[in-house]
Amino acid sequence: MAAVTMRLPAARAPLDSGARRGGEKHLVAPGDTITTDTGYMRGHGTYVEDDKLIASVAGVVERVNKLVCVRALKARYNGEIGDIVVGRITEVQQKRWKVETNSRLDSVLLLSSINLPGGELRRKSAEDELAMRDYLQEGDLISAEVQSIFSDGAVSLHTRSLKYGKLGQGVLVQVSPSLVKRQKTHFHDLPCGASVILGNNGFIWIYPTPEQKDDEAGGYTSNLEPVPLSDREVISRLRNCIVALVTHKMMLFDTSILYCYEASLPHQIKDILKPEVTEEIVLEARQRLLDLEG
Image (cartoon, rainbow, N blue to C red; front, side):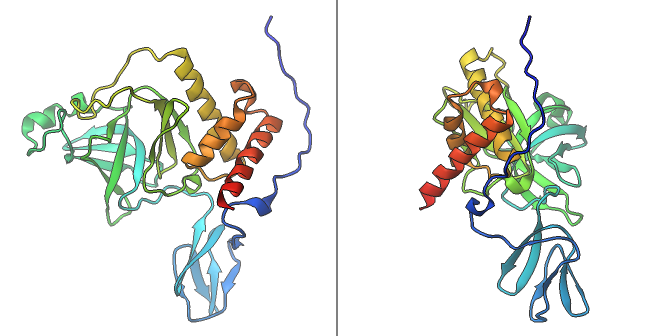
Protein backbone atom coordinates (compact mmCIF):
# COMPACT_ATOMS: atom_id res chain seq x y z
CA MET A 1 0.00 0.00 0.00
CA ALA A 2 1.44 3.37 -1.06
CA ALA A 3 2.36 5.87 1.67
CA VAL A 4 0.31 9.05 1.79
CA THR A 5 1.75 12.34 3.02
CA MET A 6 -0.75 14.55 4.85
CA ARG A 7 0.01 18.17 5.67
CA LEU A 8 -1.59 20.63 8.06
CA PRO A 9 -1.64 24.34 7.20
CA ALA A 10 1.23 26.27 8.76
CA ALA A 11 2.28 29.90 8.61
CA ARG A 12 5.69 30.37 7.02
CA ALA A 13 7.90 33.43 7.25
CA PRO A 14 8.29 35.12 3.84
CA LEU A 15 11.69 35.09 2.20
CA ASP A 16 13.82 38.16 2.84
CA SER A 17 12.63 40.68 0.27
CA GLY A 18 15.71 42.83 0.79
CA ALA A 19 17.92 40.16 -0.75
CA ARG A 20 16.29 40.34 -4.16
CA ARG A 21 18.43 40.88 -7.20
CA GLY A 22 18.74 44.46 -8.34
CA GLY A 23 17.95 46.09 -4.95
CA GLU A 24 14.77 47.98 -4.16
CA LYS A 25 12.16 48.49 -6.88
CA HIS A 26 9.60 51.27 -7.15
CA LEU A 27 6.35 49.28 -7.05
CA VAL A 28 3.01 50.93 -7.81
CA ALA A 29 -0.65 49.89 -7.87
CA PRO A 30 -3.32 51.22 -10.26
CA GLY A 31 -4.17 54.81 -9.28
CA ASP A 32 -0.86 55.52 -7.52
CA THR A 33 0.80 58.83 -8.37
CA ILE A 34 4.24 58.23 -9.89
CA THR A 35 5.35 61.86 -10.15
CA THR A 36 3.94 65.39 -10.23
CA ASP A 37 6.83 66.67 -12.37
CA THR A 38 5.42 67.83 -15.73
CA GLY A 39 8.78 67.34 -17.45
CA TYR A 40 8.31 63.56 -17.82
CA MET A 41 6.98 61.75 -20.92
CA ARG A 42 4.09 59.30 -20.47
CA GLY A 43 4.90 55.68 -21.34
CA HIS A 44 3.07 52.34 -21.25
CA GLY A 45 1.05 51.67 -18.09
CA THR A 46 0.57 55.35 -17.18
CA TYR A 47 -1.89 58.20 -17.75
CA VAL A 48 -2.00 61.92 -16.90
CA GLU A 49 -4.67 63.50 -14.67
CA ASP A 50 -4.50 66.95 -13.01
CA ASP A 51 -0.85 67.32 -14.06
CA LYS A 52 0.01 64.05 -12.26
CA LEU A 53 1.51 60.96 -13.87
CA ILE A 54 -0.57 58.03 -12.55
CA ALA A 55 -0.09 54.26 -12.88
CA SER A 56 -2.80 52.34 -14.74
CA VAL A 57 -1.40 48.86 -13.92
CA ALA A 58 0.33 47.21 -10.97
CA GLY A 59 4.03 46.87 -11.61
CA VAL A 60 7.54 48.28 -11.50
CA VAL A 61 8.27 51.88 -12.52
CA GLU A 62 10.98 52.09 -15.18
CA ARG A 63 12.62 55.35 -16.27
CA VAL A 64 14.61 55.88 -19.47
CA ASN A 65 15.77 59.49 -19.54
CA LYS A 66 12.47 61.46 -19.45
CA LEU A 67 10.27 58.49 -20.42
CA VAL A 68 8.40 56.85 -17.53
CA CYS A 69 6.52 53.56 -17.94
CA VAL A 70 5.20 50.81 -15.68
CA ARG A 71 6.16 47.22 -16.45
CA ALA A 72 3.28 45.01 -15.30
CA LEU A 73 4.21 42.28 -12.81
CA LYS A 74 1.84 39.84 -14.45
CA ALA A 75 0.77 40.33 -18.04
CA ARG A 76 0.50 38.67 -21.41
CA TYR A 77 3.65 38.55 -23.53
CA ASN A 78 4.38 41.72 -25.51
CA GLY A 79 6.68 40.78 -28.37
CA GLU A 80 9.89 42.62 -29.20
CA ILE A 81 11.92 42.11 -32.36
CA GLY A 82 14.73 39.61 -31.75
CA ASP A 83 12.98 37.79 -28.88
CA ILE A 84 13.34 34.01 -28.68
CA VAL A 85 9.96 32.31 -28.19
CA VAL A 86 8.59 28.80 -27.77
CA GLY A 87 5.11 28.35 -29.23
CA ARG A 88 2.49 25.78 -30.23
CA ILE A 89 0.97 25.54 -33.71
CA THR A 90 -2.80 26.09 -33.42
CA GLU A 91 -3.87 26.32 -37.07
CA VAL A 92 -2.50 25.76 -40.58
CA GLN A 93 -3.70 28.51 -42.94
CA GLN A 94 -2.86 29.59 -46.47
CA LYS A 95 0.89 30.25 -46.62
CA ARG A 96 1.09 30.66 -42.82
CA TRP A 97 0.78 28.93 -39.47
CA LYS A 98 -0.93 30.44 -36.42
CA VAL A 99 1.11 30.00 -33.24
CA GLU A 100 0.09 30.32 -29.57
CA THR A 101 2.86 32.30 -27.85
CA ASN A 102 1.13 33.51 -24.64
CA SER A 103 0.40 36.94 -26.18
CA ARG A 104 -2.94 38.73 -26.63
CA LEU A 105 -3.19 37.68 -30.28
CA ASP A 106 -2.05 34.54 -32.07
CA SER A 107 1.39 34.92 -33.62
CA VAL A 108 2.04 34.19 -37.29
CA LEU A 109 4.75 32.07 -38.93
CA LEU A 110 4.77 32.69 -42.68
CA LEU A 111 5.74 29.93 -45.12
CA SER A 112 8.27 32.38 -46.57
CA SER A 113 9.86 32.78 -43.11
CA ILE A 114 11.05 29.19 -42.66
CA ASN A 115 13.96 27.13 -43.91
CA LEU A 116 12.76 24.04 -45.73
CA PRO A 117 14.07 20.64 -44.56
CA GLY A 118 17.71 20.41 -45.56
CA GLY A 119 18.27 24.08 -44.84
CA GLU A 120 17.77 25.13 -48.46
CA LEU A 121 16.85 28.74 -49.19
CA ARG A 122 14.63 29.18 -52.24
CA ARG A 123 11.29 30.63 -53.26
CA LYS A 124 8.40 28.59 -51.89
CA SER A 125 6.26 26.93 -54.57
CA ALA A 126 2.65 25.72 -54.71
CA GLU A 127 3.93 22.22 -53.85
CA ASP A 128 5.50 23.60 -50.66
CA GLU A 129 2.18 25.20 -49.75
CA LEU A 130 0.37 21.89 -50.18
CA ALA A 131 2.98 20.15 -48.00
CA MET A 132 2.80 22.66 -45.11
CA ARG A 133 1.19 20.15 -42.76
CA ASP A 134 4.08 17.74 -43.42
CA TYR A 135 6.47 20.29 -41.92
CA LEU A 136 4.37 21.58 -39.01
CA GLN A 137 0.87 20.57 -37.94
CA GLU A 138 -1.55 21.48 -35.17
CA GLY A 139 -0.13 20.73 -31.73
CA ASP A 140 3.54 20.84 -32.75
CA LEU A 141 5.86 22.87 -30.52
CA ILE A 142 8.44 25.13 -32.17
CA SER A 143 11.21 27.53 -31.21
CA ALA A 144 11.40 30.72 -33.26
CA GLU A 145 12.57 34.32 -33.30
CA VAL A 146 10.37 37.42 -33.47
CA GLN A 147 10.88 38.97 -36.90
CA SER A 148 8.44 41.89 -36.77
CA ILE A 149 5.40 43.27 -34.97
CA PHE A 150 2.16 44.00 -36.85
CA SER A 151 0.25 47.24 -36.28
CA ASP A 152 -2.34 45.46 -34.10
CA GLY A 153 0.39 44.04 -31.83
CA ALA A 154 0.45 40.53 -33.33
CA VAL A 155 3.89 38.95 -33.66
CA SER A 156 5.45 37.64 -36.89
CA LEU A 157 7.98 34.82 -36.36
CA HIS A 158 10.75 33.25 -38.41
CA THR A 159 12.80 30.03 -38.15
CA ARG A 160 15.50 30.89 -40.70
CA SER A 161 18.30 29.42 -38.55
CA LEU A 162 18.98 25.74 -37.94
CA LYS A 163 18.86 26.31 -34.16
CA TYR A 164 15.12 27.05 -34.50
CA GLY A 165 12.37 24.71 -35.67
CA LYS A 166 10.25 21.83 -34.45
CA LEU A 167 10.80 20.60 -30.89
CA GLY A 168 10.98 16.88 -30.14
CA GLN A 169 10.75 15.19 -26.75
CA GLY A 170 10.86 17.21 -23.56
CA VAL A 171 8.79 19.09 -20.98
CA LEU A 172 7.08 22.46 -21.38
CA VAL A 173 6.82 24.77 -18.35
CA GLN A 174 4.68 27.92 -18.57
CA VAL A 175 5.69 30.86 -16.36
CA SER A 176 5.11 34.62 -16.30
CA PRO A 177 7.14 36.32 -19.09
CA SER A 178 8.31 38.94 -16.56
CA LEU A 179 10.33 36.25 -14.71
CA VAL A 180 12.48 35.31 -17.74
CA LYS A 181 15.67 37.37 -17.73
CA ARG A 182 16.73 38.82 -21.09
CA GLN A 183 20.16 37.51 -22.12
CA LYS A 184 22.37 37.26 -25.20
CA THR A 185 21.33 33.65 -25.68
CA HIS A 186 18.27 31.79 -24.44
CA PHE A 187 19.51 28.32 -25.51
CA HIS A 188 21.50 26.68 -22.70
CA ASP A 189 23.15 23.25 -22.51
CA LEU A 190 23.38 22.75 -18.75
CA PRO A 191 26.22 20.63 -17.28
CA CYS A 192 23.68 18.39 -15.54
CA GLY A 193 22.90 16.69 -18.87
CA ALA A 194 19.80 18.53 -20.07
CA SER A 195 19.18 21.66 -22.14
CA VAL A 196 16.66 24.49 -21.75
CA ILE A 197 15.17 27.06 -24.07
CA LEU A 198 14.07 30.07 -22.02
CA GLY A 199 11.41 31.66 -24.21
CA ASN A 200 10.94 35.40 -23.68
CA ASN A 201 7.20 34.66 -23.82
CA GLY A 202 7.32 32.58 -20.62
CA PHE A 203 7.29 29.16 -22.31
CA ILE A 204 10.32 27.13 -21.15
CA TRP A 205 11.32 23.93 -22.94
CA ILE A 206 13.46 21.33 -21.13
CA TYR A 207 14.88 18.48 -23.20
CA PRO A 208 17.76 15.95 -23.25
CA THR A 209 20.98 17.49 -24.57
CA PRO A 210 21.49 15.99 -28.07
CA GLU A 211 24.70 13.99 -28.51
CA GLN A 212 25.27 15.57 -31.91
CA LYS A 213 23.72 18.49 -33.73
CA ASP A 214 21.65 17.19 -36.66
CA ASP A 215 21.87 19.98 -39.23
CA GLU A 216 20.71 17.88 -42.17
CA ALA A 217 17.06 17.80 -41.13
CA GLY A 218 16.69 21.58 -41.04
CA GLY A 219 14.79 21.46 -37.77
CA TYR A 220 11.69 19.58 -38.93
CA THR A 221 12.28 15.99 -37.83
CA SER A 222 11.53 14.81 -34.31
CA ASN A 223 13.69 12.29 -32.50
CA LEU A 224 11.17 9.87 -31.01
CA GLU A 225 13.71 7.42 -29.57
CA PRO A 226 12.99 6.41 -25.94
CA VAL A 227 14.57 8.82 -23.43
CA PRO A 228 16.74 7.03 -20.81
CA LEU A 229 15.48 7.07 -17.23
CA SER A 230 18.52 9.06 -16.05
CA ASP A 231 17.71 11.86 -18.54
CA ARG A 232 14.03 11.84 -17.54
CA GLU A 233 15.01 12.22 -13.88
CA VAL A 234 17.27 15.21 -14.67
CA ILE A 235 14.49 16.84 -16.72
CA SER A 236 11.94 16.23 -13.94
CA ARG A 237 14.29 17.72 -11.33
CA LEU A 238 14.92 20.79 -13.52
CA ARG A 239 11.19 21.23 -14.04
CA ASN A 240 10.50 21.16 -10.30
CA CYS A 241 13.40 23.57 -9.65
CA ILE A 242 11.96 26.06 -12.15
CA VAL A 243 8.54 25.78 -10.47
CA ALA A 244 10.23 26.38 -7.08
CA LEU A 245 11.99 29.51 -8.38
CA VAL A 246 8.73 30.80 -9.88
CA THR A 247 6.91 30.20 -6.57
CA HIS A 248 9.30 32.65 -4.89
CA LYS A 249 9.33 35.09 -7.83
CA MET A 250 13.00 34.51 -8.67
CA MET A 251 14.28 35.55 -12.10
CA LEU A 252 14.93 32.61 -14.44
CA PHE A 253 18.25 32.35 -16.26
CA ASP A 254 20.85 29.64 -16.71
CA THR A 255 22.81 30.38 -13.49
CA SER A 256 19.78 30.63 -11.17
CA ILE A 257 18.34 27.38 -12.56
CA LEU A 258 21.68 25.57 -12.21
CA TYR A 259 22.23 26.79 -8.63
CA CYS A 260 18.71 25.70 -7.67
CA TYR A 261 19.30 22.31 -9.33
CA GLU A 262 22.52 21.78 -7.36
CA ALA A 263 20.82 22.83 -4.11
CA SER A 264 18.05 20.28 -4.75
CA LEU A 265 20.35 17.27 -5.21
CA PRO A 266 20.16 16.11 -1.54
CA HIS A 267 16.36 15.83 -1.91
CA GLN A 268 14.19 13.47 -3.87
CA ILE A 269 12.57 14.90 -7.00
CA LYS A 270 9.04 14.57 -5.61
CA ASP A 271 10.03 16.40 -2.40
CA ILE A 272 11.30 19.56 -4.15
CA LEU A 273 7.79 21.05 -4.31
CA LYS A 274 7.15 20.62 -0.57
CA PRO A 275 7.00 24.19 0.81
CA GLU A 276 9.77 23.77 3.37
CA VAL A 277 12.12 22.12 0.83
CA THR A 278 11.28 24.71 -1.84
CA GLU A 279 12.12 27.50 0.60
CA GLU A 280 15.41 25.87 1.60
CA ILE A 281 16.76 25.32 -1.92
CA VAL A 282 15.59 28.72 -3.21
CA LEU A 283 17.29 30.46 -0.26
CA GLU A 284 20.53 28.58 -0.98
CA ALA A 285 20.36 29.44 -4.69
CA ARG A 286 19.62 33.11 -3.89
CA GLN A 287 22.56 33.31 -1.48
CA ARG A 288 24.92 31.86 -4.08
CA LEU A 289 23.71 34.45 -6.61
CA LEU A 290 24.29 37.24 -4.11
CA ASP A 291 27.79 35.90 -3.38
CA LEU A 292 28.45 35.79 -7.13
CA GLU A 293 27.43 39.45 -7.47
CA GLY A 294 29.51 40.48 -4.47
